[in-house]
Amino acid sequence: MRFRSLISLVLSLTAVLAAGTPEWDRAHELYQRTEYKQSLAILLPLKNQDASTLQLIGQSYFMLGDYKKASESFEKAIPLAPQSSELYHWLGRAYGRRAEMATIFSAPSLASKTRQMFERAVQLDPKNSEALDDLFDYYLQAPGFLGGGIQKAEEVARHIAKLDEAQGYYAQAQLNDKRNEYQAAEEQLRHAAEIAPREASRIIDLAKYLAKRGHTKESDAMFAQAAKVAPDSPKVLFERADTYIRERRNLSDARQLLQRYLTSQLTPDDPPREQAQELLKKIDR
Image 1 (cartoon, rainbow, N blue to C red):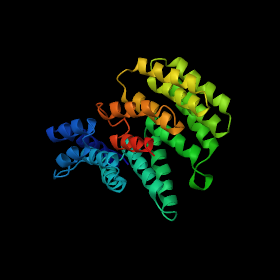
Image 2 (image 1 turned 180 degrees about the vertical axis):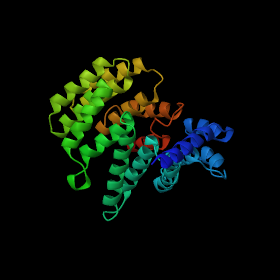
Image 3 (image 1 turned 120 degrees about the horizontal axis):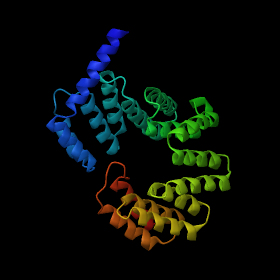
């Protein structure tokens, strides 16, 4: 066991050191600017692809929508950094996207792999908030025969709340909504926005749910508040436009918001431009 631990430590250190190479730094810079193809053009020719390089390759493929190549790259990276919670989480995300597009014959297997990777990511790092959020969503949405279940989701929600009170309220809101307890869900989202008034994402969550509940006037006020909190946030533009299009109202405003979004400086945390372009097409339908 000690020998195996030493090997894992050496491999992890090697990956960290390699992440500082000029090629990786340049590729990572391009990735952060959502220039995924350009990032791959630097990374793919490299002869010695360590865990960090393989992870960045996988992330770039993921962002380009090639989830099979993404998962293959993450699978290659994990033996080189077996204690990386982040790698297991990314692999779970790639399996999840593949499951969404798979046939009824292969989807269950991919879904189970998704759950296993998320669980492993949380096991390796119980404070990996993104992995916790995805595991919560999986448990909440997946049927029992695929390892889902609302009781499992409740347990993860309690863990989330200990790490981030506002996110805990958000998770509880999802549980309430799942049980058709819509007023309770709305109250939880209000709590989240109240305790994190400078986080635009909390205000956006509330704005979207208010719109879903038919409270359009208050929803619009919340979106305006989010825009004041984060005036340069592409996410505010996208989510407001998406809400308008879903409700088939304020379509002219939605078009302007998406046009502004498409000219914004995006990051990997923002929806891809292709998604915004698809929303624009919906306006004309």
